[in-house]
Structure formats: structure tokens, C-alpha cells
Image 1 (tube, rainbow, N blue to C red):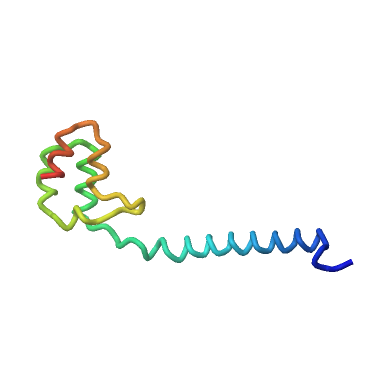
Image 2: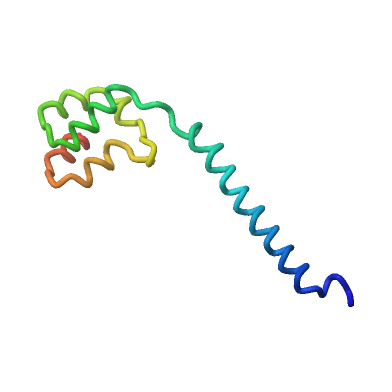
Length: 97
């Protein structure tokens, strides 16, 4: 019997390939995530918190820090994303101005 036709050998090869793919995916997750995002500024954190809490007056002050609007969190969300999902339309209008 040829060793290439052995079902056990095929199963082991398939398992080895699957394990290799899983290890590669896990390695790319741990290697890319920490380097992918820069730490958020204090202004960005305050801005996002004002958006989430619906604090209009605070938000009007924090949007002056334009660089804070360009910072994404670990989910890849910018303050604009947070503003879009808020029920108060005025929040989105302030962020877009």
C-alpha cells in the first residue's frame, strides 16, 4: 500500500495544516493589535465620554480639539462613530460642525 493513500496520514496532514493556520491567526492577532492603535489623548477620552453621556455643553468645548476627533479607540471607532449611535441628534450635529 502506498503511504500517500493512507487515511491516517491524510488525517494527520489535514490536522497539521489546520493547526498551522490557527497558530498563524493567533500570532497575527497578538502581534498587530498592540501596535495598531496609539494611546488615546485625554481630550479624546473626555470628548467620547461627553458624547456618551449626552453632555452638550462639555461636548461643545471638547470638539475644539480637532486632533482628538481623529483618534480611534481599540474598536477602531472615532468620536463620530460614537455620536452617530447616540439618540440625541444635537450631539451628532455638534460633532459634524
